[in-house]
Length: 489
Image (tube, rainbow, N blue to C red; front, side, top):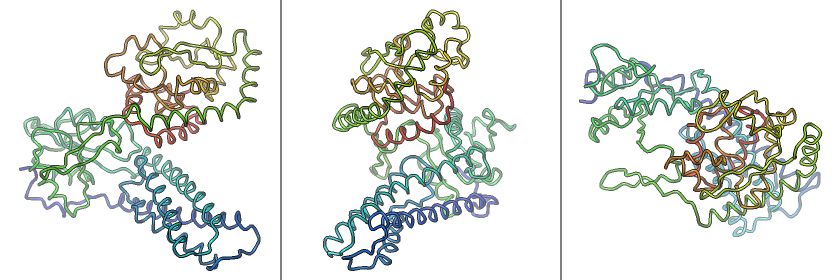
């Protein structure tokens, strides 16, 4: 048996955590109020931008009716696309995708209705309102999510209490994965392991207490006061046992989640297909060529050209500061390895003394990171201007030329040195399947503070799961990473 028949699950004290449910509902109410406020401000911006202080003319319906109706229809569209589902709020990019989709669908519905009914509402007013509102909703959701993530990282009762069920190896792996990103809101408080592994005395898996076996999951839920049961892989957890556990949890508010052995695969590549009553997970192959790649290359070059043009005065000031601060060239060119293992010269503003490579041998014993890279917080080779440029990532601006030449992308894995690539194994070499980037997941996740293992994991995740939407998200987050200057040295 998987669960005890002597303890009714619906009578368990503390399962689920009522306080967490109240916080979740309060957060959803806050999001609803925030969205409504944004939309009310949006229609005012659209009205005054289009008409100023003049009286609107030619409209069959007064705008005192049109504006509230637009806000109400927009809120209904957000509700219809489940933009207030607590399983979406605060997780991944699906929240932003749903908000954007709801706004675009509303715009399409208004366009079709206006054409058929021939309603004389200003297209300028509608266009401005819909464009500003869509951006405002996404920005507001981003700000609210940051606050939610900070609350989750600090604890403060915002995280789900999780009981992990599975064999020892998979339990430890799942615990490590959940703790790697505490802002996701899953706090592991206990584990249940197979009966054969459970000793007569209490055990611990690392710092996670083992609170029972597969026969005592119901009792473990009660004693640990959990609201989520996460099932990892185990040979003893048959389909019949999992189905029975799901029945036991029905109507209790305790969530059942299954953690597949497949990790680091983004949602758009995963599709569930019911076959003979089995929910088979179909994983799409990574996309390394095709139309989306062509669009990505065009967007990269267009943005790089625009930023370079606007930043010319800043580039000139930086070049002058480098020249005054220390002798040597302004631009530092270093050989890196790009897509397919092809070497190219990456351009950066020089931030070190001219004999930096010769001094590296003397400093090799003071390396402060693991893996194949050399990182040192107080590197004596860095110049005064160089420290400032590195703190704000201004030394990387010349890489925009590499993007124009097609050697790099705006977003991608960190461009490695040939000495690093020489030590790559088969898995790490997959970083070379796409162009390296000026920024990437490594940049927005800690930069030099990351371990070698975490940096490689993030790069491989990007290679397997890249998308234009993810690129835009990473570019947005890069500004925050630069402003915070965390891990920049």
